[in-house]
Image (tube, rainbow, N blue to C red; front, side, top):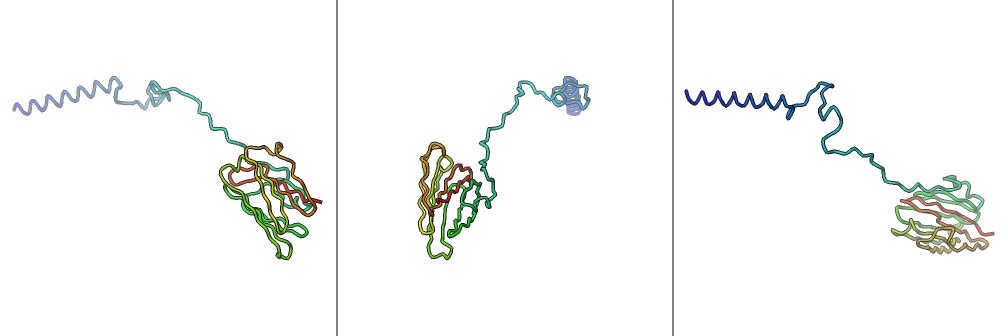
Length: 182
């Protein structure tokens, strides 16, 4: 019977140890709302409570005429462009395509006998000011990296030439200004 007594003593010792730990609160949490346990106070030992600040995002580009492409019918507008947009003028159709990091222009005259295209792209587009001089048969685009639109040289307009200025560019959205030369 010595093995049975030893087993009974171990069981008794384990029960006593469990009861002692439960009384001191080392392993058990109380469901009693008055009990000051970690789960009820919302605080843990050694943890600091700090307000997390969200990263500051740049505001989305905005344009004077918003996305009202009809404002461009008179040859002068400032619009927000994403994806592909087509503008029609007297003897010129302009298609502007904006994707994640580039701008592309395609022009054609009304009978599609003359056409031109240009494109600029790359990771620096968001920090660039670009200007394009567009006719049915010719597209010339130049970008100025790290220049704000108000610091760029004034675009020269000529009769029959459509000037496209890219004023802002962010993640596949651009603000463009169109000015038809008289």
